[in-house]
Length: 150
Image (cartoon, rainbow, N blue to C red; front, side):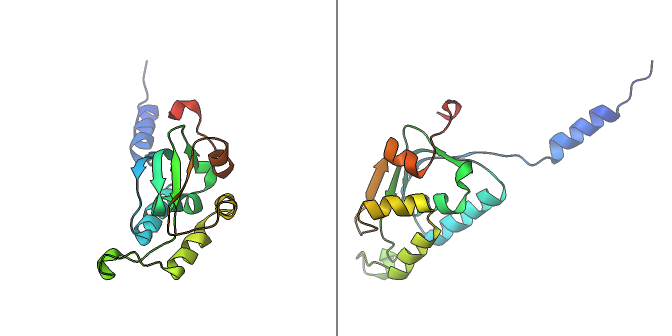
């Protein structure tokens, strides 16, 4: 009896050549520089990875909703989203919070209709953080995750 090694070798090649897909789990992200978040989420989108919002996702973190396809993003019961107007880096404004209208328009241009609708119902983007926590309001913006992601 002669055994062929070809099926085994083929399986090993597929195992080592196939791209690894990993989920990004957001648990405590308070935001940061918009351009850094755009680049990060574009990489995740291009790799077709999933994003599980499993805690705080505030400020620039919320760009995930406009860059990664919504069918690749979900929320757990611990999720919350926080939105506010964009502002300039405080190191350039002597520690003062100075709103950037251009930055705020840029943020809004990325948000999907579900986010824009929630913001419109809640007074739009303002300097103060507006939060939406788990429940029906959040699920109108983004789908809940299947239970295996909790």
